[in-house]
Image (cartoon, rainbow, N blue to C red):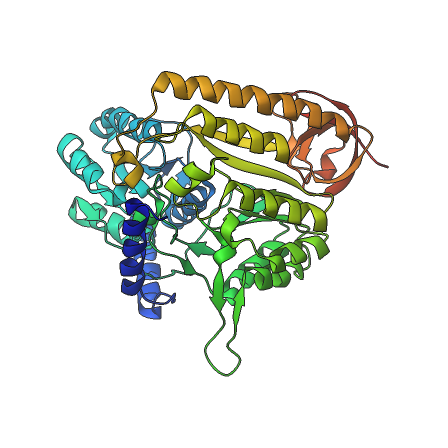
Length: 491
């Protein structure tokens, strides 16, 4: 039986879906204007030693957005610095999934006031938080010295916003509602020359009752398959070996090809097949799929591919069917476990990671035991655990049956203990096995050792020549440790 919350969410989804347009590219005129403005700013900054500092919060999609912001900043004549207090341009790319992230943003903006007063630095704040009206109100009232506020749907206009600040000393507030467009052609600055993320879609239609993302990222919009493939091919030509496909719900991807008689629509399985054919790319990963949309054709593509990672991230969020219904997740505990069993049967070497929320409103001890039961049965390689955090504007935040903080933390600790024990036990199965590993560089904890990750995302350290950095090599695991494995290069 549907709850009133779910009925209201379904109504909202229907209303919002009727508002947006089909995915489309930004018109050429807008692209040309953006290029022109970037060139004008680079002329203004010519012969100046200017630096930008970017602070990124949140998920991989936020990190991908920051790569675009960095790309624009560098084309406008700024060099990157990690030092707070020494930059001419500060960009804060925000996340609104967790309350503590919001508090961190306000604290960081406060810190930058001194830099602005001392050297006239420009402060720009964007990202998901900027799509929340109460946040904008607080920023305008308490932090009036911010120069630019931009939202998730106006990131592509960052150069134009900055131009107004530089030429007219304007305070720019560029936040709009969902517009349904996909913007291509933005410059990108990637730090890692071996691994790269590629966004395949934006937005989400699911409206989980605890999640603010559909309200700040908008409805689902898929990029055209040829744009994605061209980006992947370009990365391969630049020497990248591993790509991570990004989306709020990647397995609901539906892309339509170029207009004309040859136009065709492909789903996520079809996109994976096409990317699998790209020469030079040796490792393909993706996040995050939704259990309700994980179809047999995707399982089949993963099973047949030697490139697609065999660790699959499938967020469960809770093991209780009652809680899952109240979360509006659209699957039961039994359906989730059936999906896991189906994937294991087709891909015997598969392993799983997941997300779990502890202390969702109304969660009982019995509900939490159901979550522990799922963790025991699936035996995850990795679990990303979160204590439920209220998000203004979501149905779950309005519920009266909030779980006490003390109870939430006690349950979190029990879950963590179970997961830690499973991880420690799972590590032992790797001893003596050989894995193809992308050598990422020197270990942060031991400069004499190289590091990389197994297909199941286990950190591995090993000795080797610097020349193999950026290459995929075979590593035999010789010992296990709590947070990493140790191996030897197979000669």
